[in-house]
Image: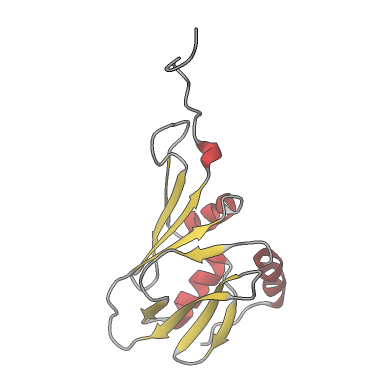
Length: 160
């Protein structure tokens, strides 16, 4: 059965997407081969609110980000008859949107890794890892330096 969206969900997603910035950090091409196109579309719509731009029987194109300069970043899903090789897709989400997406992704089994009150390198990173319906791995990251504890000056180089 083809995957469809409810109209109220589409309105909500359009409002949410107007303010969200998602960018792809993976060096791999933005194409994932999947065995279940409906399940993959449903996951990216429910967990990341990615709007569906184009869809046919063998592929789907989802919008990651529409920049102010008019450029649109996309993720393509391509139906594969064979079991596709597992890939890792890394996306960065703006720190203001991370808590919202963290809840959505954790409802889909994502594990959250973050530090609290640390001043160690990497303290600003928040990372969500989850397995996609076809076995690919999704990593969603956000950088928020306000999460780090400020370094305390120990008087090194200070005049006494």
